[in-house]
Amino acid sequence: MLIELRNGAMFYAAGKVVHGFGRGSKQLGIPTANLDASVVARLPSTIANGIYFGWARVEGYPVCKTVVSIGWNPFFRNITRSVEAHLIERFDEDFYDRVMHLLILKYHRPERDFENLGKFFIYNGYFYWVNRAVE
Image (cartoon, rainbow, N blue to C red; front, top):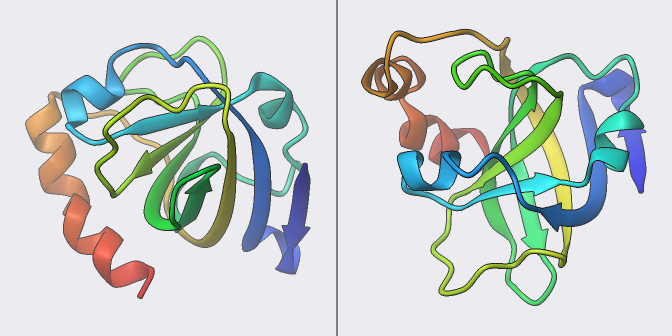
């Protein structure tokens, strides 16, 4: 399910959580939930690749803040476009095959590459922006 709101500035998407590329959650230290490719394929053309802030709810869990990467993720050299939600919450178990609801509220920046993971975190001010942007 995909609903676009306000000219692409805010939108809702939902779909099954699928296995990603096997590196984001481990390297970032926060859960990463990838939406099924069918949801990615149906994204409206007005939804630009980039980094977004919003809220997420995985079936069976409470709502939490999220930073969502939409696109090719140049730092990790993706070969397919993806929607990867970095959930700012700790989970005790995997939640593959559960439905995740995303409410994307704010566009933060376009995708870009980084020399290393340290520069990725410094540039993004990751946790500061997540906590500020969605309050």
